[in-house]
Image 1 (spheres, helix red, strand yellow):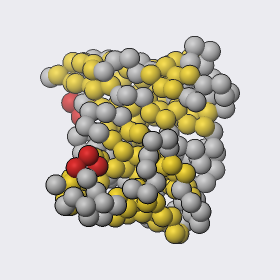
Image 2: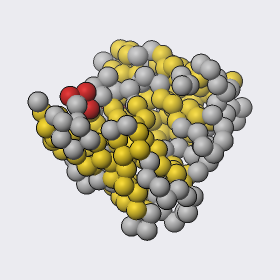
Image 3: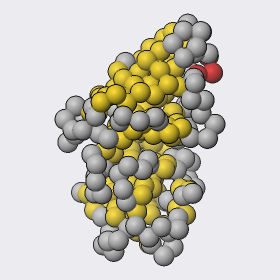
Length: 116
Length: 115
């Protein structure tokens, strides 16, 4: 099956610094990728939809200036958490699908971000 | 907007027994997909089974099967011959027929499998 690779798997950063998370589709081209956030024992909440070559579409309540998304190629989307604060600590997951109707979403391994 | 409801925060099943996880959803669309995902402690999302709304036949994948009731907007997952490795969070999800749309997840059901 298709593989989506997310890096890093975990990261610890200091308050006020920025962290970049990469999401790569390894064996297919993904016009659209999605970024989710998951708090402990909760469901996945969609943060934004990342479209190759255009601006990301953010869900209501998600600060676009804090969570910068770049989808520069058909195989790579990045999420940068800027000026991170402890409340940004969470599990971030990306997913991607091949273009088309009958296609499943493939998920990255997720990134556990801890801001100290 | 579509909503997905999982009314069972936790379920328990004995090894080799059968368990059913419930899911209901709300949508005004007629063409869509429904999914069950498993999230083990590693937190990697694993697709368990998928159902296309326009197909009347219930999807089946080995020990996993669904009961899809389109009119009732119900999509339950049945796990037969439960195994210890089935213990995980299970999420029901809805998606528009076009893969350019994101998955909309329920809150999840934590499944415990006892020996």
